[in-house]
Length: 436
Image 1 (cartoon, rainbow, N blue to C red):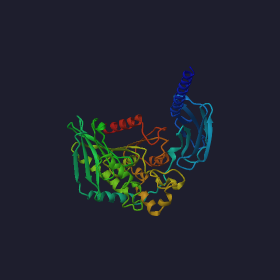
Image 2 (cartoon, rainbow, N blue to C red):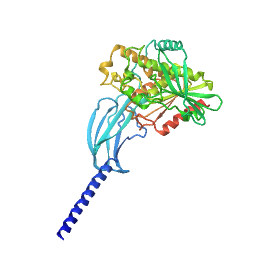
Image 3 (cartoon, one colour):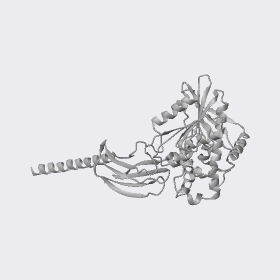
Image 4 (cartoon, rainbow, N blue to C red):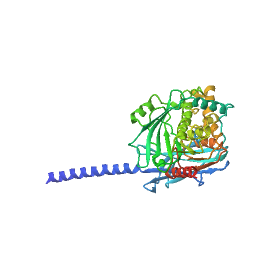
């Protein structure tokens, strides 16, 4: 009898132990559902100089406000040292932080964090102050146009050697897909994925230029199926359909830090070959027998947003452009105590090695702001205020320099990414322009 009771007690303890572990596990899993939301008090997050924004912080779990969450926050101009650091408890699941105004046009950001188990949960909101009044800091060289006119003349001397490889496994019932490579400046080549509608006819063409990184590309088959010739290029002079390990090795090795290669020499800087490669890609599209001869556009995001603006500025064959969150914009902003564009040549980490006369001179010939000033064709531009990679301060410096027709779609909550509605808006704009 006593043995039976003892066994029963042991079994009870074991069951209770399992229940305790299960409960702890459930609580741990539940804690990972914690999210933070931060919003500014004006619907568009845009303020006049002198206005003082308020930021609302909310903690949520499983769709409900979570009380008594301790958060830390930092407040200050984007990409600059915080002017205020503090913590507070969201006693009722939310709290409001009041901020001072900025003294000049720019962006004020609050970054909020909390600990949830072994994870740090983060959210942010960024208030704009008179963004339409942000002016660039980069200098426009007197010989800017001459420099690039000569570079294009040099490119024209390069043999127009084209190689096409049919990618039958990627082709569809309505679109033929190829890997294309073309002789570029020097001994380099430009590779890309070409998509051409199978149906006989004449079509508009779109050059798709890439964001930063080293990766393969699939081509824009979806747009080609709508009746466009598309060419999606890489910039590194290597095939764009290799095994992923090749790109991983190059990203970690030979191409690590490529945006700074030869920054001290404007004639051999890495992006010179890249910018000219975009022109060479246009040479091919303009020569394609299915091209309609008139309607040519360029589109990209981040580094690709920069390349879209650069290409449209350098080549009159481009009639329209789409640029999402353009990089390489007003990179010298940091030298004037404000955010500068990606790749942040002059931020606190890099300023010591890059703040030289030669590197500053190179930047002047490659900064997107100075190409934006040359634009003559309509463009669609879009970004978010919470972008921590391409600061909106830098992007507005470029956008405000454009005198050509322009449309700006702000998706304020987004960071360095696009959402479906944003992509659809850009695509619809582009199609409406190219098929007028």
